[in-house]
Every structure is written in structure tokens, then in C-alpha cells.
Image 1 (cartoon, helix red, strand yellow):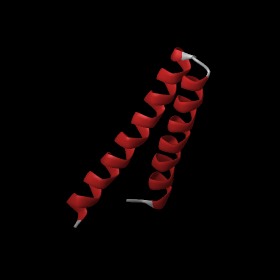
Image 2: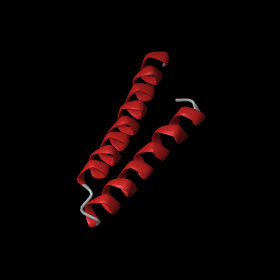
Image 3: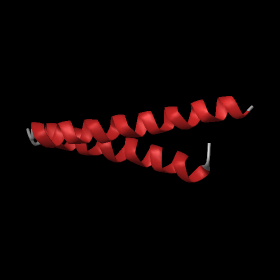
Image 4: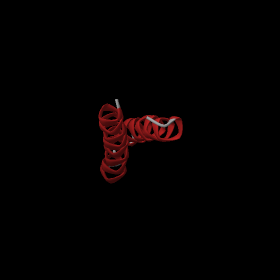
Length: 57
């Protein structure tokens, strides 16, 4: 996994989780959904890169 893509995936997960938790605390469900989507996108990006790496070895 390239270091740049790995960092981007992890950053999306962290930002998404932070936004989701803050939005839940403020009762902003639309923003919470956007944070959850961002977190999910980060997990999918990381999974994609891990899959690509498994085929390289």
C-alpha cells in the first residue's frame, strides 16, 4: 500500500469519526450521516489498497 493512500485512508477515517461523534452530541443527524459516510469511505479506500497489495505479493 502506498504511504500516501494509506495516510489518506486513515485521515478520512479519523475525520469521519470525529465529525460523526460531534454531530451526534449536537443532535445534527444530517451532519452525522456525512461523517459516517466519510469514515466508511476511508475504510473502503484502505481495504482497496490492502487488496491491491495482496495481489502484488
